[in-house]
Amino acid sequence: MSVAKNLNRSDLLGAAVSGLCAIHCTLTPLFFAARPMLEGRLGAHAHGSGWWASLDYIFLVLSLLAVWYSARHTKHPSLRYLLWAAWITFAVGLLLEPYELAYAKWLMYAGSITLVFAHVRNHCHCRQCVGEG
Image (cartoon, rainbow, N blue to C red; front, side, top):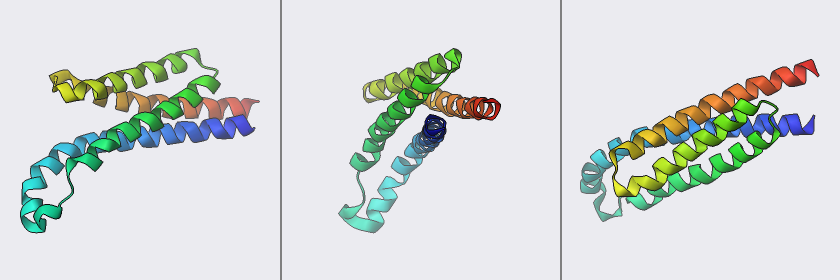
């Protein structure tokens, strides 16, 4: 029962982190578009891009932990592969983003959205397994 609870938590954490990452990626262009206006009103003390960009790597590490735990404990092999493929897609997109390649953002979006789907699907699958056993 303890493994099932931890697995559900890792799937919920993974879905939440991936969802927050997708929101973060969606808001980033708006943040940078509003930045000149904010700097004009707030002066030189407006938040720079450093802390905002560091969220990418925080999401990457948190999602890695959630995928590692969920994939390790799931009994559904195709979900295990989907979790890892989605995380790798997300990581490749994130690591290619500084090179300003057009498809890097799309890889991040696709990986993040697929991670949400895979974690939710794994969570539902594990709840069914616990209910049957």
